[in-house]
Image (tube, rainbow, N blue to C red):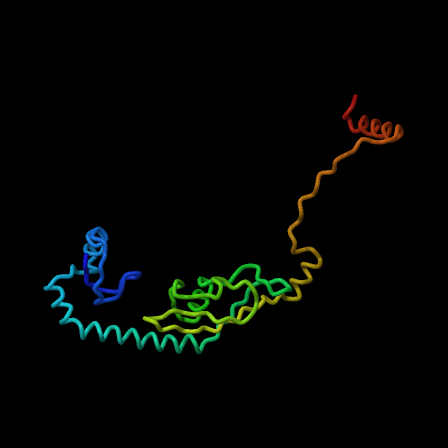
Length: 197
């Protein structure tokens, strides 16, 4: 079924696009929500009249995309994570964590549009993250991943063992006394404890 999009629809297209969709998808979802119009002579004429308005909307998106690109590329993102001595992270930097860090700086980006090298960063270093904006516009975000600094008081605690979780104690397994004297002493100790009559 041929339809005209009334607004931007993710994974389908943007306002004014003419698309071919499954009839069930159009009848059950797109048409009831007024996201699309069925393509025919009447709606094609309406689209022609709205063409200037649609082009203005698209131009606005391009300008917003360019300004967002400048803002992203001007910012250098620093992400601090716990890491081992060899620089390997105790986790990973993903598109989700990059989106969260950008949001803290007032830049809202859909995490699906963020492309982290190798899908996730697993070691300390400097990286370039690609952010897909409007149409084919892309922004390159400089991202520095640094090891989390451990304070001297935390180091002292870990050396003293105070910060560590107590390990479960192993239960002592008593072995059979080997000599006759040891057996007699064990028997006498058991009597004194009231284990034997």
